[in-house]
Length: 536
Image (tube, rainbow, N blue to C red):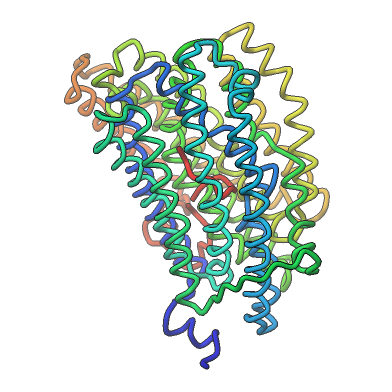
């Protein structure tokens, strides 16, 4: 039988840091576009109201079970474990460990999901606190459908880790496309007959094809062999549990933020869906510049940590600096063009003018935190690459606990906008805490960020945002799609022109990195939150 390493050469191609980033950037871009289509269809068919409140809330209990039992990041922790077997040429042992972890946890997770389905009504009543009985009942039914997703996501994450260890990202790049495609297909084909249930069915179909099946096919193509082993005393199983335990026990603001917001927003009909629409639009560019950065960076950071601590520090700071630079630029245009963005992406059908105005206001507030959401993922991955999941867990848990009173206080003072402001403050505190800890441990020195480049990007962002906002003053106002598209296109063109000119005049390295894609720019650019859960 041919060696599995040689089979990689014939059936899978390992990616360099650059090619992996580029591949995942393209995937994230396409996924972001599909996500916009998905949001547009949901808004058009269902608008803002109880049905979308129920659908959005229905993901919460399944996600909570996943995070409590497997840390929500099966592939993240398992990559660290499989890398050791791969480096020692023990692929067969790695497959045995993979099979055992998968089998044991699938049994445990299945039992937990059955129990969750039984107690779903209590969860919806006391945690989500949906006041409308019909909305609460609908949420329970959708929750029970979506519980199946967690089995598919976990198994897909385990199989996907086998591919990540080999630095094969093609299958991962297809995941969000197939998942979004499933929801879109469900909405288009089934909404008239099944209502909002069509979205849940589409999500399950997307998870099956986009996460479970494609990763299984990919792992098999490079020689992975599953076996029905079941050994609770396996040292490797214990090692995986030890790595994952901090992520299971400690929950950061990254995970809990939407759950906290939904808890308070459940008191107001339509508030959950309104926040979700705004957040999904905010996620579209963040998917391109943030989480995929971590997905592509993790195996390379892990390798550098073992070989060269200095190179590790440089690689993380280089990636974060360019990520922050791009985030600053995007923040300026997203805030300046918030209303036309919402009008183009969501307005129409059952999503009315008042909904669009309210969503635009929340969208602006979300955009203020883009730099924190994008960069925290890379800083977390820096810890994971070093095999340290405990420190970010403790830090994240402390920040989350301290943030809870802030959510309550700002909600009472400012309503739904107050929840978004609390979210911004919480994620900023989380990111700052990670930066301080990495710096104090001597892992990633904060002073080594590319401050000169960040200053140039900040200057370009301010001028570009002003140019975009100023250009809208000379365009016709209107509520039609064509008018909104004209305003969006013109404002974007004005922003882009000013940003490019400023960056070139200040001799920023960013245009060279983005346009010429130099190999010296190992800036892991794109894909989502450091979890195995897909975007909704």
